[in-house]
Image (cartoon, rainbow, N blue to C red):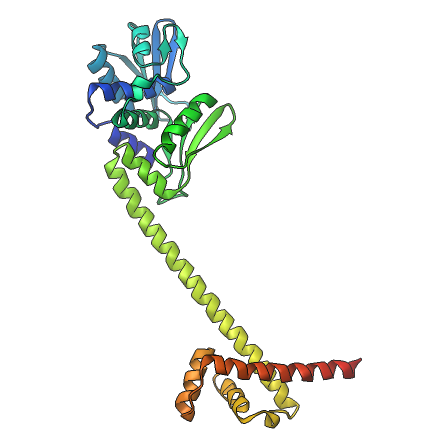
Length: 314
């Protein structure tokens, strides 16, 4: 079972009051119901969503939906659950603010989302109808809703962003996708629709992945530092060997020559480590900064030798 299906199964069992049931049904019918004259037909692949719709319609309107199942046409061979309402269709659609008389409404009237609990219920119905979210264990963070009209997409975006979820819209073929990419915001959305078990699972995985990513970044940073230390030490050794091959090592100041000798003796040590070694072995304190300046003098002499060799070759 997918993570999306698991969430839909969980939120389809939440107990709510009648006004919240209407908000939830409004989102469900708005996105997956087809209307033909005085009939409503709803098709879903999720058995829990089909059961939820059946129960809500019965509780609010006292109607038993006709339910049939058939094999899906996709390669998954999943079942499709088809619910049909053959009476009171106009009354229900007007009550759910999908119709206003015989006029189709692109967004519901204000009473459907009159307070925070109704908004949360509407978003819960929206997710059951057309929402999906990637399993954080298997893929990148992504939550989306696929809707039919741009006005409706903007409406959904405004609701989500009223909770600071930073949702955005993109056109996808003949649909509009309202999506959230940030891991923390997706977790917040799951809290909003009261998917508690999903939140616990999601946050566990998110924390684990964030910790793993941080560890990898630290390891990469540490490796980069090690590579830099080795590269710097190799450059210093090459400078020293060049000076030595040209008989210039004895011309260096005693302290600079000392640094050169210790670099050859400890080729893999960092400047910090090398300064500590020299301090311990000679009894003369030398800081990392002081050692750095000594190697600058070695570099300057090595460059002079290189310049002279270039001039000779010309």
